[in-house]
Length: 67
Picture 1 (cartoon, rainbow, N blue to C red):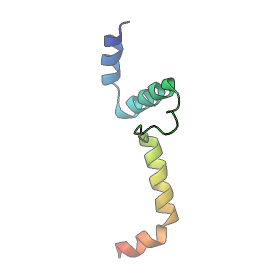
Picture 2 (tube, rainbow, N blue to C red):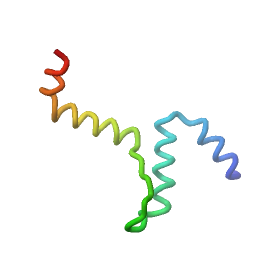
Picture 3 (cartoon, rainbow, N blue to C red):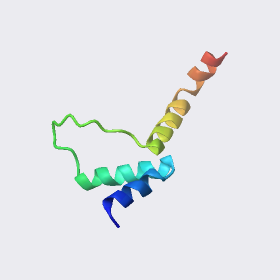
């Protein structure tokens, strides 16, 4: 299978699975050298979990804001 074929298959994946592929490829490169200014992105699952934690931590604040 050629790289072009792999790329086309990745493009056809649902967003969640594309995120898993991106995470995998980033891990292949290893950690960024210390002091580098590489931009890192959270996966959709990491964002979801962090959002739930914030909502739980500040549940009362959000309840008051909603009133």
